[in-house]
Length: 405
Image 1 (cartoon, rainbow, N blue to C red):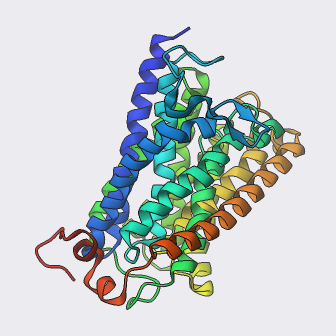
Image 2 (image 1 turned 90 degrees about the vertical axis):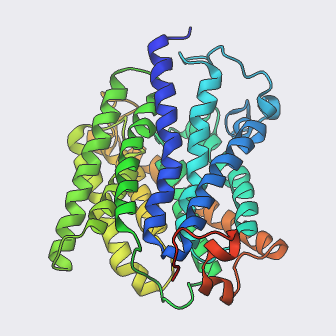
């Protein structure tokens, strides 16, 4: 039976998650050079449109259609055939609203990868890769972890709002992509943000949208909704303070860039655990994600020399891995799900570990193959002239500002 309060909340949560993708565009756009901000915004907005259509046509049924051997959803829901307003079993919201909510998760996941190849990708290659990656990487992974009958779901994997399905897959794919496409020309592996206030505003609205992301994953108004809401805020706050302190101690000054990066790392880390842990655990999870993210962004990236432009791997990938494993440590069945290691159930940590390894291997191998296919068909990297001029002008014939670097 449809519950009015649950339906209203999920409509709001869906809208909050939808806004996270263009907001991500401003977060990323503020961090790139000004000659490339429109290309980043364009990529995020086009993902919102293209993946929405892909989800309605084929994505939803592959992810949440009737299970086929634990591997993939059947085609019974293709083109949303048979998807009406009656709730799915065990739910209190219209089936179509569940489709909409999950659609926004499918949208933002490939958008996260944009930060890895920013400033040097062909728009045509990006578009083909996005469609293939969403269909062949995201949709199967969502089925394995979230769909009734999915093989990792059946093992007991806990991923409340997408730490594994979204952030690990996007983060690992970003690392592979950044290595394959190569470093940006002319600026080593880093560049100064051209508009840090844009990035700060983007981070603030990501934090705001994340309440829909995490608390909405309870799929209704219940105690677990409130727990996820509180844990989301607490982890983000703990992570922001942690990164600020690390910046202050290591680099001798606290920075706005450090604080907003820490916020995102904490939000990522708490995502898989949001509805399963206590507020005190959320502080540890957020701080842990921030600490590990700081190490990878400040040291590991420089040591290994890959050019993940906006640190998708260092923030989303690493904090996502930590959050998934931390769920196996801190989960309490009194909050939701099942107990983790610290509550006497070491098996849950093993299940989380297996899930993390599967996500890493599947997304890494799949991204490598899809990149090579797209590069062969369309080419993935712009030439040196276009890269030097900037993607705003060369790919879209537009400029965000009167003068462009």
